[in-house]
Length: 44
Ligand SMILES: [Zn+2]
Image 1 (cartoon, rainbow, N blue to C red):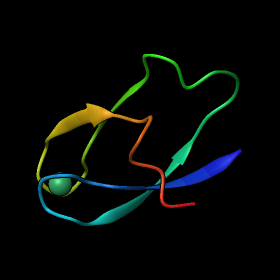
Image 2: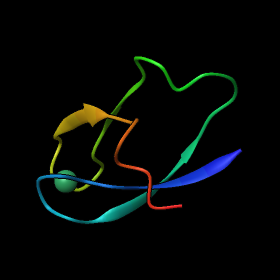
Image 3: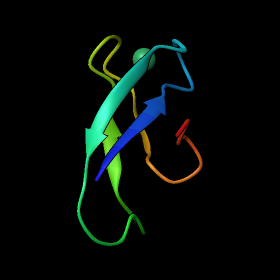
Image 4: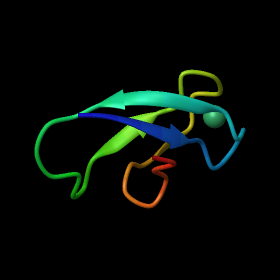
């Protein structure tokens, strides 16, 4: 499953490939380096 996430700091969108639950998963922004929870940042 490929999701699109939006960084809460810089606002850039990035793709995120995942399988299974998103519970507790974190992603580091490829643009600014901010780490944020995947859940709640899903654009689509
Ligand atoms: Zn960012």
